[in-house]
Amino acid sequence: MTTEINELLDRWATQSDGPVTLRLKQKLLPVEESGIIFPPTYADIGYNIDTLSNGTRVATIDSVGSQANRLEPIFKSESKNPKDWLVPQIQIVIRKEDCGECEGCKKNAESGESKKAKKQACQQPREVTRSLLDLAHRAADAVVQSSPDLLKLIGPAFKALQRGDAGPLCAIAPTSLVFGVWDSRGDTREKRPRLVRSIIRAWDVEVIHAAAQFNSVWKLLDEEKQKGLTDAAKKQGKDWEKRISGAGLKDAPATFRKTKVSQYVNGSPNPEARVLGGVLVKGRIEREVTVNLVALRGLRGANEDETAAIRKYLLGLSLVAATADIELFLREGCLLRYAENGDAWYQVPRRGEPTPVALSAQMAKDYAKDTVKHFRSKWPEVFKDKWPELKYEFNLAEAKNLLVKKTAEEEPAKAK
Image (tube, rainbow, N blue to C red; front, side, top):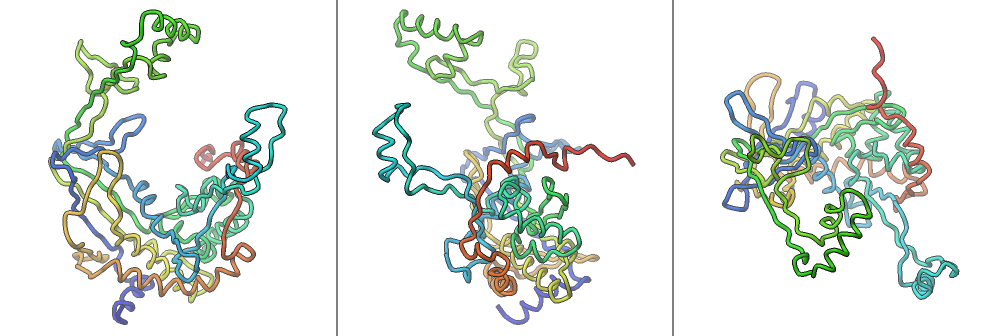
């Protein structure tokens, strides 16, 4: 990366009169020629489709939150060498499972389910871990709140953030600042906006419906076996037919989804109750990405040098996320691809027209590798005896305590 480019990025991070945002709009295409793709399905509404005043129907294909959860894991590293990391690789041990191979596990298998046999302890239990980069609420996640040793770091970091110092959280969980965080379960209730925002929408869509028929072995059973299954199901309660179907022993049509909407209107199938089968996209599919430089420059450290280091480091991480070619297999029935060979980034000033700017994934990585050095030197002191393995234990008792603790969403609004 040239000195000129490095200085440009530094100005974006530190100069208050710099551009307000960096913006990218990518055209996407479905891999299937039919143009039918499957948006996410929400429990109460099905697909999230809005109808504009001109009649155009716009569907959410991947929400802002979903895009953030797809982008954050790109910072996970397979390397054991901290010099290769852009962010700390924190792992939380959720539980430990028997290995099934040691002598203790073999003896347990031999004794079977005998109540008299004493269960042998596994000699090589396997840890089931979760990366902090995989947690939906990042540093404010319930899993973090339930991991005492990790909370000893995160809790004070949020308090420092509340006082206006983003340095501690930036050293521990920088992607929480990149993708936004709300300490709704913690003591501070501190909330910070996303620096990187991405969303995928499809324009001019028509909803398609689906229907399916599951054929079981029911017709192959003789009357005696059918009666036996029916009698056994009836003993379980009123919904005996659903019980047989749920067990996979009776034919079951799938034409309506579970909803409060009536399945029929005036004797005809109600489209609002039908099983969803995707949307036909007659317009465009677009992914919009923005990097909020105003929010970035709103972050501060303990002094001017720390403030500059925080902003440069977070800009580097934000650009790595924003320029990444993420996989676009969003869900079953929704595999997309990039329509164009390159991306056209624009810097948006406070006034005037946006102007093109050369920005590449390699440029972003080079800048991030340079700006992480300031914080990498702090990691051993920050994590102390946990360095460099960075493994923390999830505590069930602490998780139970969260059940009786009100979150920020649950607290009643204070009277004005």
